[in-house]
Image 1 (cartoon, rainbow, N blue to C red):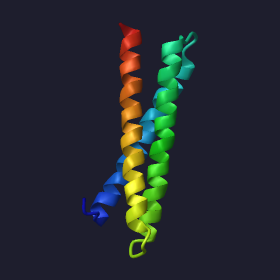
Image 2: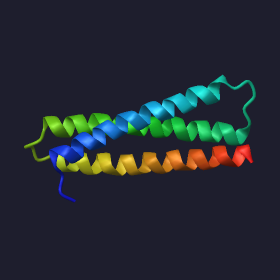
Image 3: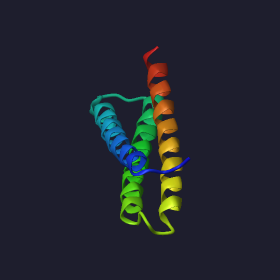
Length: 102
């Protein structure tokens, strides 16, 4: 995939938004008085995915700073893989939350 300035901006913007959403979900789960093992696992998935999204923001920023450098493409590739993994962790956490609600 060809990396453009717009794709990097989009990745950074969406990564920051999803990080804040996942941190809000962690705060909501932490506010519950009783939490079982499945909800604790979902909480961990949301927490680690928010950390991953924050790493995506940092890597996207570094890729923008080194736009003409030789490491910019590698940084973006790593950021895309971390973004995909964090998105998968968010989906797994959401599935676990739906499982506990049933």
